[in-house]
Amino acid sequence: MQLDVLTPDSSRWRSLLDQIPHDIYQLPDYLLVEAARTRTLPEAMVVEDQGQMLLAPYLLRRCGDPTADEWDAADQLDAVSPYGYPGLLLNEAARGDAEFIDRALAQLCGGLKEKGVCSAFFRLHPLLNADFKTDMFGCTVVDHGATVAIDLIQPEAQLWNQTKSGHRNKINRCRRQGWVAKLVPCATHLPVFVDIYTETMARVGATGTYFEFDQDYFEGLHRALGDRLHLCVVETEGEAASAGLYTESHGIVQALFGGTRTAFLKQSPTTLETDFVRQWAKGRGAQVLHLGGGVGAAQDPLFEFKAGFSPGRWRFQSLRLVSDPAQYQALANRRAKALGVVPEALTQGTFFPAYRATIEE
Image (tube, rainbow, N blue to C red; front, side, top):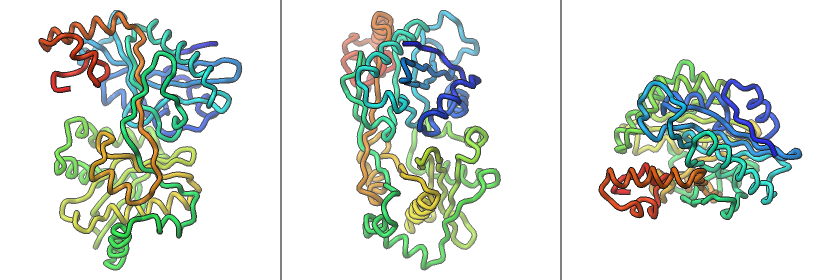
């Protein structure tokens, strides 16, 4: 069994992706965009054995000062998935082979420890990692909640019938009133999207993290993804009422970011937008439109909106791995001392890694 560390400039990383179904979240260029946003280092590890393969992309973070400009070999590190659902990719020969997955995770754990990484947090892909078990080597798999996906293999009439009546009424009303959903070039319309997205985040009281997705970020995302990134807008009398970014890879269309002008909330243009993208994706031969879940995977109004388009449910899970237990505990002890609590208040809590928790968590 062999383990190798890959950097984004590695042609092998891209070659491995050519061999397995994947989403945009595992692309080295996507990790580069996320690394710039989060001040982290992008890498991947690949474990191979007799034709079986596991690929794990991640971002390296300092456990000390994250704002320092220079990385030091002595830095204590941890690993985290980039934003979205990167998960762990398995080729066909490895999928469903619990013995290989256990051994590969053991190798991954050892490789991370050797790099000075004491823990890793991987966001699993609801579709590509749907068959992951919860009792894998040295790992904890946590279920965060459901996501919504539309099975585009079904006939169009069935997809329409699965849409709840309230959504169908809003779609028909928008059409009668002359509202138009269409795809527009990202190169010329990203500023419109960013303006709508920013207005939406401010209206819903989003946290600072969501405001890190700014004009520069989305322009970088467009450069990284190219024709894998699509922008849909809904217009009324020439004015954009809603806008959404969607990605496409290996038959999976993802609803990535979106927003609605406050002035048009009552008309719900995003309902028309989702219906349009559903038809567009199906027409391109995509197999699934993944709408995602609620904020933080909660069963909130956002989740209920998405659930109105399909009964299809998938689980969003994370995989948590402690590769260096002694160092992990030392960091947790230091964090607990800084917060004035006993270490168990952090290590027995739900937040991972414990040494990044706050009192409230």
